[in-house]
Structures are given as C-alpha cells and as structure tokens.
Image 1: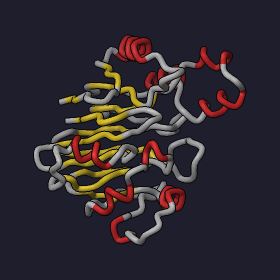
Image 2: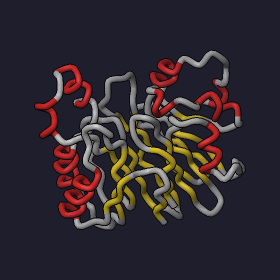
Image 3: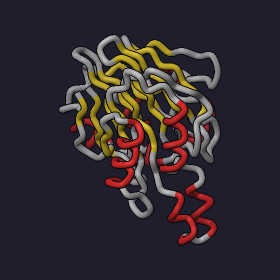
Image 4: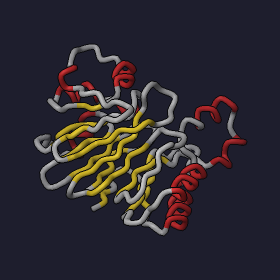
Length: 235
C-alpha cells in the first residue's frame, strides 16, 4: 500500500508498505510523526529515499539515520544537507546515471529531476507486491518518458494562470515546480496502460487548487486520481 504522511511545502513524507517491508520516501517532517506513521515499529523499514536537501524533504534525515535506517540520496544532496556527524556507512549514494539500488525487495532507479538545487532526483521503484511506482516531486518538468507504471505519485504544484498575479520573484520560484499544465502535457506523452492510480503531491497551499487539479487530471487520463494529503492510503 501507499501512505501519505505529509505533502506540501511544510513537509513531505510517504510510505511504500508491503507485507514485510516499508520504504520511506522523504523525511521532511518531525521524526515523531514519521514514527507515528510507522505505528512506532521500525522493524519493517528497509530504507529511506531523499530527493533533495530542502528542509521540507530532509528535515529528519539525522534522526532517521540515528534509528539505524539507511538513507539513499545523491552526493549533491548529502553535501547540501551538510550533516555534522559521520553516518557515511548508512548513506549509499544514488547516482544520476546508470545506477540501480536494491533495498530489500525494492528496486530503485534514480533519474534527474529539474529543481533549483544540486543533483535532485526522482525515483522509479519496483516491488513484486506493488509493481512499478513513479515518485517525482519538486521538478518543473521531466525529461524521461515513463510507460506502464502501476502507481504515479507526482507533483502538481500550481496552475500557470496564477502567475500573472504574483510578484516576479515568486513567479521565478514557482518555475522550479511542476505546473498543472506541464503535468497534463507530460502525462499525455506517456503510455498509461495498466496505470491504476495517480496521486498529486506537493500542491501549493497558496497557488494550488486540489479539487480542480484532481478533476482535470482524472478527466484527461481516465485514471483514478487522488489528492496527496495527510492520511491518504492507497491499497
């Protein structure tokens, strides 16, 4: 199953859970909240993936490491987090090109994201129980084409029709995130045969319209579309 513990600029954390294993995606919320989402049982956790160093995605990396959990990220992301203690034995790098990580029964293929940081990543994840899961956030577009993915968790941060109402500096900031329009164009290029669901994540609190985004993506794709909000569980 897929669980959303938090999504948005105040913090991000998601769980991919199978019968025997859990993979954490992002650690951008308080460690207590992460433990609550795990029912205070860390025994099934096989690892944690971090897309980039911004605090709403990496806030609790140190605490996750201290729990004895390996945290996977790019070298650029690690440099951006700038840990003040040595847990290098628990931080396997995810390289941008031609790297595959085996984390328990999860197979993780990282790919380049397009954000205003050094070496941000998205992830294509496979597990025999879940199938293929695409995870992409904080990326204003995606170069790769993904076909026949079972579950898609992808950013839909804002709609471009709000940009004219914003100060120039804010508009530039928004261009480091994916718009509704870009997402629609992107999904239209993919073969969504077999895709079971699409979850819209990291929706802007001020400039996003969750109900509109959900409606338009579901109408475009014909696929069940969810708003990625705290408490969402997809089985």
